[in-house]
Image (tube, rainbow, N blue to C red; front, side):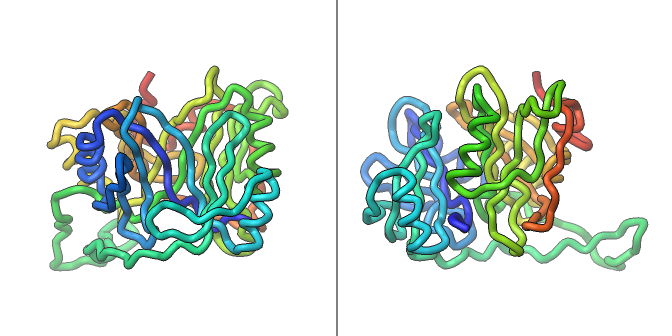
Length: 303
């Protein structure tokens, strides 16, 4: 068990003020600006969850939180590099490597955790056919940005998904929750990979790998407080004139309620809630590619 969780994503944007405004409207919180690098945090305890520096728009890589110093040294050996002091907020030690398609991978151990920021709200009480549980009380979520509680996962495109999936499993200790194939079952088109945390429950996927002509980012995804938070975040972003991509709907693989937006540089960012959890007793499932690999309900996938 090498990796404890995904910790942050790394970008470049040509206009830091513009991306700063969008990501705050999306639901992230102010962090630090160090030189030409802008750090933003979520409501959870991560020192930061998003960093971008000034330059030509690009997705650069992923930061992971490592479970132990022994795991960090094991990763250093895998990438034939040294453990170094981490220069990011929170400090600690880190190892830098890259995947076979050139994405920067950073592995951090011992970073100082941030104090979580209260996100307000109380658990939703539902009146539905199973029971009327809210007599005399109204459901009135507060208008405003969603609350990005944590970075949940990302999806990447690969021209060689089968081999890249194998590399993430063999090198980083991930495991497939579900596989998608086209034609023959051994023709793997995509996979949703979870962290190997033994009996501990973990997200259905932390990294999704999808076949495509060129390496690229499909999307990054932040978990929101609850279902209403996704809806209120949607209204807030619409009101502010941002470009919507897809949603609201419910995915098939992972079951998340989703809502996708374009950031000012055109990258896809997702709000989600109500994702599946898996552990080492959960069997790997396999499905042919089709509409069910995209959603259970919601608007059609944009062409």
